Image (cartoon, rainbow, N blue to C red; front, side, top):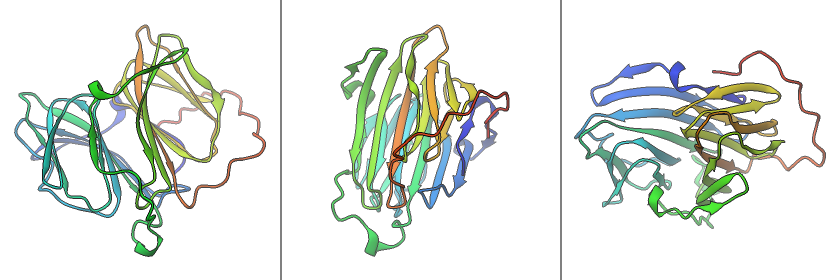
Amino acid sequence: MTSSAFLWENLVVKTTPLGERRDVSNHPTATLAVFECHITTLNPGRESHAPHRHPQEEIIIIKEGSVDVHINGRIERAGPGATLFYASNDAHNVRNVGDTRATYWVINLASAATHRPAEHNAASSLLSGVFPWEKLTPKTTAVGSVRPVLSGSTVTLKNLESHITTLRAGEVSHAAHQHPDEEVILVEEGLIEVTINGVAQRGGPGSIYFFASQDFHGLRNVGTTQAAYHVIRVVTAATPPALTSARPQASPATTPLTR
């Protein structure tokens, strides 16, 4: 899988007995055995599935609605902007407890170690949990704010880091840069323009961007209101070392990078 943009309006909507589903990706990457992502919409009173377990780590981010989150028999309420983290083999599910539909992003991260227990990281520091938006402490930045969410090792990943960035209108998150970590951007609100190796693409709420290892990428708020987006960065045993010198960035092109 290469760097890609998945715009909300281009995702195919499939009606399910529970509500709706939008498939995004189910492919290997340079550092992951599988990067699987989809967007689920649950009708009121419905649950994602019976509580189940699987070896890969999973992240869910609530786009809209109110859900009860089951983790190993414990129930916790979560609303828009909340991040749910399910560690390897912990029992989990989600139930829509609101009067309207609930929609959330789902990301499953499988590394080469996921199905090989001998390679599991015994020093895992991240536990399953619910991280509500209103309990995340914002840190003011020169261009907006950032809310740290996850940071640490897991059973099958060397490092998993996530945060939520808020950008004021017209601001740039940073200059185009590259790093060996693979990165996912989920747009919560606003209109952002992402460049990947010089190719620009704009996306609004619900859109998803995947930055492959070592690809140049940058992001700016091109809307008239603030933009907020979730950032997930992954390091595995297959992640290469950082480059000692950056290659030149490609000149802007007109070819869209949308998948």
